[in-house]
Length: 397
Image (cartoon, rainbow, N blue to C red; front, top):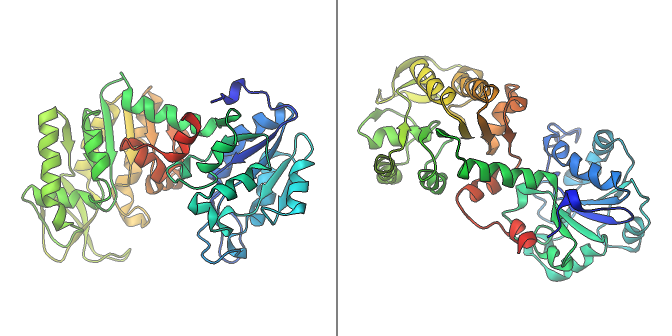
C-alpha cells in the first residue's frame, strides 16, 4: 500500500472513490449540505498539484431502476468546480468510447466526474467485470470514501485488486482511521463516550465495545428511557424497547464490573405529545407519568453531563440527547455541543460521528470546534464495534 503523501501523481490518472452522496433539494437539485465534497478537496488538490489528473467516482442517493436524473451527479459539477478552483468535466456514462476518451485525454490539473455508480446494479454486487471496466479510467486507485468503507461494493473493495501496488487511502480516510484509533487507544484519560439516539438495539455492539475502553459512558436520547425503565423507573409514554430491558441491565452491570461510570439523565423535559406545540414540564426521569414522554434532558442532567465532559481528555459523541430537530427539545443536544467545544478548546481530543450528531454540530455551528467530525456514520460505528471494513481491507490487505 502506498501513502498518498509519499506518492507522486505527476502524469498519472488517479481514479478516486469519493463520497459525494450529498443531499439535493427535490425541486431545484441544489446541494443543501456540501460537507462531504469539502472533505475530499485536500486529496484531489494533492493529485492535481503533483501534476496528475483526477477521475472521480461516487454514488448519490438510492436509485432503484437504473439511471434517474434525480440522482445524477451532473447536478453537483458546478459546486465541485467552485470548491476545487479548476475545470471539472462530466461523463454521463461510465463506460463508452466517449467516457474512456475523456479519462484518457484528461489534461494534467483537471478533473473528470463520472456518473452515479449505482445507476449500474453491478456496483452494489461487487462485480469483478464491473471493476475491470472502471479500472480502465485510471493508472492509480485512491479510496477516500470512508462513508462507504463498510460496504463490499465494486468501487470500494473489488476494484482495488486491479491495482496491485498503486492503491492507497486519501487524506480523509487516513484521518478517520487515525481519529478512531486515537480514541480507542488513547493514553489521554479520562475517556468519555456519549451515546444517544432512539434505540438501544441499534447501539448494543458499540456500547459493549466501548465499555472496555472508556472511563465514563453517557447515555442520552430515546434509548436512555429503556435504561431508566430497566433500573426500575417509571417512564410514562417515552420510547422504550421492552425486549432490550435485560440487555440494558447487562450493560449497566458490566460497566460496574469494569469500573466504568454510567450516566443516565436524572431529569427530562417531557411533553404530552410528539409536537413542537406540546405542553412541557421538567420531571425526574424515573418518575414520568402516563401521558407524558421524554423528548430532551433537563437542566440538572445538562449540568451533570457538562462536569463530566469538561473533565475528560478524550471524547466520543455519537447520537443526540433529544429531538433536536424541534427547537423546543434542542437544549440538551446544543448544551452537549457547547460542553465538548469547551473541552476541546482546553486541549481535549473530541470525535463526533454518526449522522444525527454530525447534523447537530453543523446545525448549531460547532463543527469547526471539534477535533474531528466523521463523514462516515455507519462505517464509523462498525469500525468502533471492531468490525473489519471491506473498503479498508481492500487497501491494506
